Image (cartoon, rainbow, N blue to C red; front, side, top):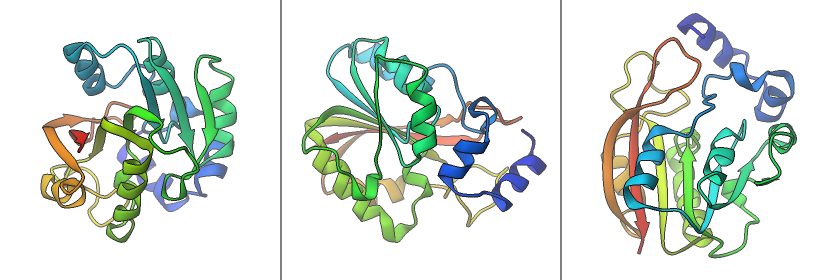
Length: 207
């Protein structure tokens, strides 16, 4: 997908559920069949190989499926029923279900790890506190949030548009009260675009 196609996508975006209904997931800008390289590096370097793992905004389901191969008990959630329907056909090792993170129905203290690859950065500033509230609730004590957002350093995509470009200070402002920030790392999003958008990868541990 080139820049013109990306702009057309934004202008004609029909909503998450219709988009997943009408579109081949392998053509979506964020589609990545392999486990995200930043999360993979964290898992391997810290020797994480057990526990409950939430893939938040699972979309195509590829990240959840890859995480299940590392020995985790994995749940994949998405706001789109059609995304979940498609993901369920790919694996019986992952519990896929529809859930809206801002009004999540997931149980308290359900997960040891959460991976957010592109959900937080779609929310406006006014919605971020509700996102954090839900993450705190469903994450176990001392649980880990792996957060990957579009970086403020990304210059190939327009400002003041979804996804929002996030700075380190915005992460600090949103999470410091309830999380210890263990790592910031400049990275990229790998997907189907002709370039790799700059990303900010953060590892946060619940206090």
